Image (cartoon, rainbow, N blue to C red; front, top):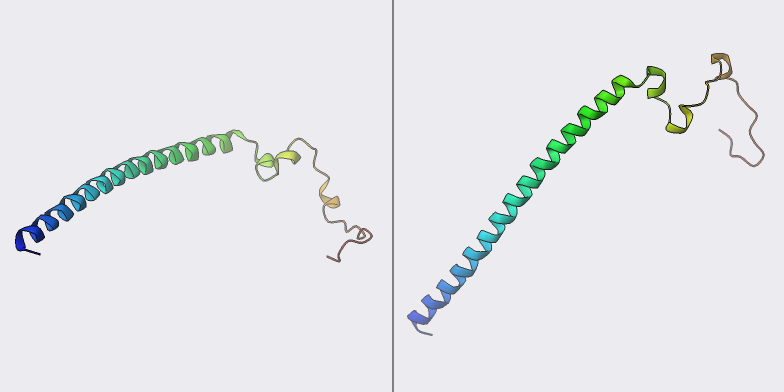
Length: 91
């Protein structure tokens, strides 16, 4: 292999590498933009959640969705122990 052929091969590799670098830079820029958009959307969602929390009555915040429309039992009934169901593992 002579020197001119070696230089030509090195130039070809350099060109291919430069193309790959360019593609990776474009991809990195797209991903950076997408990340910024996602972070902005998350900030919007966090602000929306705060607004919803402020509008939700305090007694409804810590209850599951299905329980929010049911009346709560009186406090003295919350601590009543019931006998275990048949076949249920012990608590």
